[in-house]
View (cartoon, helix red, strand yellow):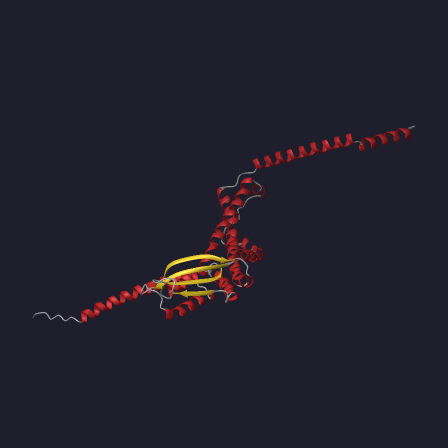
Length: 323
């Protein structure tokens, strides 16, 4: 009898344990337990926060500085390594394989991130090197929302300052070198792709130069700079596409000193000069700096000549005063 009762109770308990109703009851109880536990944890955290004394102003200042100073070093190093590595890649692999400047900068980021990992420990010790003492916060104070937010704010301010200081590297990096090298590489590959026509028959008052070749940024500046450097004034300029990836530039020029047509015997030399400019393009900005330097030198020579003329005039005149 007792064995039969135990069997019935066991079967009933198994059926109840496997029934959907029992599972829902247990699930609801579990959720209520978890909700109660979470609420208790929040309440406990609030009680601890209320019981924890707030950090003093000097403590918060030290906390901010100790969070910011290592990130200044990290930001400066990250920016510097990326700029120098990216520029080196752009001027070498970028020229050889035709990589864009943005791609070279992305490869430079590999080096800057690697440097951050290798020297991260040294950067974290910068605050100690600068003699900034520890904030002296307790573990409970470090868990305060104010302290966490201030630590993040200090790191953000530090990395922004470091990256801004890293931009000073642009003052010592020749950012124009890569475009010139890429343009020169392209010119060597398309050395015989240009055709130049110089004519005095189209106009009576000027010489018409027609340059046909691939459409590449920088060639127009190179040609105009070359004309100006060789003593020609540009009166008109037009450009149009004469085919797919082929452009036709038309220059109307005169001699700078005479304001007349280029003599027929000088047309071949002028065409050769322009052809050489297509093979070795100039940096327009560097050319402008050179022109400004020549202008300053010319002004100095004029001033010196004026002084010499004054000395010569004085030497030509003798004044004899009466006794």
